Length: 264
Image 1 (cartoon, rainbow, N blue to C red):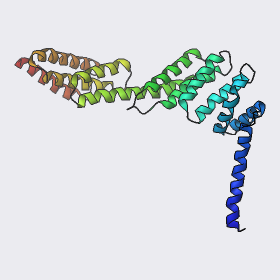
Image 2 (image 1 turned 90 degrees about the horizontal axis):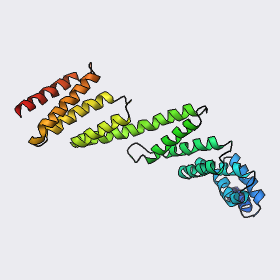
Image 3 (image 1 turned 90 degrees about the vertical axis):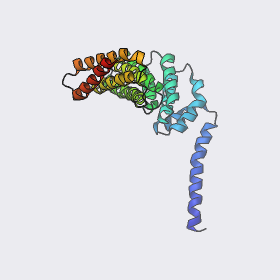
Image 4 (image 1 turned 60 degrees about the vertical axis):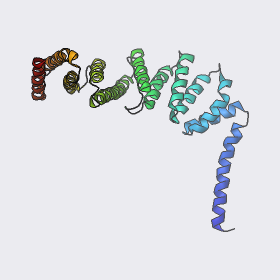
């Protein structure tokens, strides 16, 4: 037989042998063997094989001393395989099933971290982002001396910045679409939810512009009230940012507003 034909045959036999070993263990019915081989696969980073074997025997260890470590490893395989929703589910189950475990603190962190991994770009629904923030905050509250507190705070800052970006872009979209009332309400909600935002000055200026545009595009009976509201927004802005780079633009809007009120 030529070498060219022999090499694929050898490779096939080798791969079949490796697979046969896993299949032999999986189908053996030997709980101890499956457990030990599952742990071996886990420690080697072969998480799919480890998970498959753990699933076969995990119920057999219920009530035994190995159960706690086995369940934690099983939850971890889901995380390593990027099945983050399942890893959050199983780590959460771990915290309730083993409330006195030395691994409970780590499991609580992994619940939040799994949701962190599920957090999508800011344009999409942020339900998992909020779950992650809640999880990290609970962890910090429950374990204030943990070495993970600093990391939790850092990750929460990242997640909150994402929520802030989403809120800003939604409010700005209303503004660009000339939905000025909705824009004003959205900007107000943003400032309430994120009082420390670095974009507060720009947001408040956009609120002045939106208030003026809303008034100018209102029916006559509503204009006076809304122009007066615009002047209130202008005064709030001046009080907060007396040296703002927007002061000239602000003065122009104020002049237009006062003129419109006189004409009414």
